[in-house]
Structure formats: C-alpha cells, structure tokens
Image (cartoon, rainbow over all chains, first blue to last red; front, side):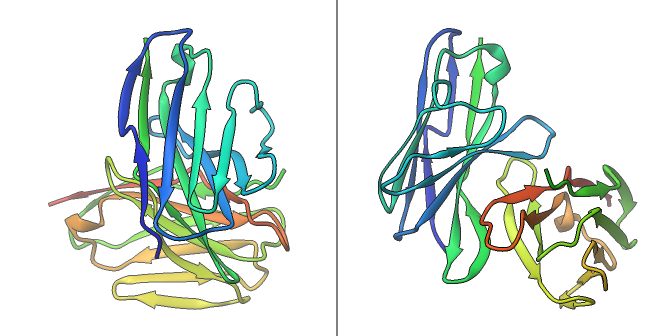
Length: 115
Length: 112
C-alpha cells in the first residue's frame, strides 16, 4: 500500500483568497486523483493528474478554479482559487495502486472552511 | 455518465444484528470496489470484485457481485461497534478507465 500525506490538514480561509493543497506519496505513482467530499456526502472526482501532462478535469470543474500541478511521480498540488463559502469541503488526493490493480489509496484529506 | 446507486442511505442496527448495503447500476460494470470511511477518516479500500457471481469474504464481511455484473452487496454479520462508518461502492467507468464513480454511501450506526 502507499502512504500518502496531505498539507495542510485543515484551514480556514477568507473568501476571495486561494489555498494550495499538497499531496505527497511515499512511492512513485503514475496517476493521482483529486476529490472533493462535502460533509456527509460522497466523493466527487475533480481531476486526474498524470506526471508530464495537463490534468484532466471532470465536468463542472475547470482549471482556472482548480489548477493542478504534477511536477514528479510522488507529488501533486491542488489550488482552490478565488474561494467562496461554497468551496468549503474536504479535499482528498488518492493514488492508484498500479500494476493492473485498480484500487485507490487516499490521503487523510484537507478540511477547508471558507468564511 | 455512469451512475452507481447505493441503498440505504442510513442504517441503524443494534450491536450483533446483521447489516447489508446494496449497489446497483443500469449498465454492466467491469468491476466493483468497496471502501469504508470511518467518522473523521478517509476512505479505505476493502475489496474489489471482478467476476460475474463472485463472492468474497473477509471475516464477518461478505461481498457479492451479481451474475449480470450490474449489482453488488456488502453484508456484515453480527455487527460490532468497530463497524461504524460509511460504506461506499465504487466502479470503474469502463474498460481501460482509471477513474472511479462512487455511490452515495451507506452510513452505518451501531447501537451498543
């Protein structure tokens, strides 16, 4: 299994500001995923981040709002830009186990509150 | 896009009772995965089912994949307080896809 860390674990931000969330994996992985989970809700995929290429965004999510970096095979960042209270949520990164295994390992999440 | 419907949304059981959550799709699934999320925690992978009619067991947990590969279930025998959490099913979007579509989850409460 992969060990995944996220920073920050939580933050309270003012509307109109931006927050960058970091995701670090203890091994090299091809695919990383960013999800949003609103309180009591399911997981919604924001984008898929592959090293060396532009992230692929899901319907309803755009790069200007959620820019993603993937500089190497162990690290990715998600920025939540120009935040509003509606962006308050838990943001999770995950990685696929790889080698024909499809299960995903999740980071501990970043709890974001926008005032 | 592909949707995975999961029921019930909530389930309250007395400790020692059994629990089942169901996952259904209108389309044939290549596989189905199950995750558990403890309160305040992150989703943790439990199991993956791939074959039609497949049944897998993990101690008190029994996972089934329907013959038509359109439905799945997770059954817990004799629940314990440690089983508390939300159980999600998730399915790959299609052959060759790496993205998962998650069900809405079933939140299990166990009354001691």
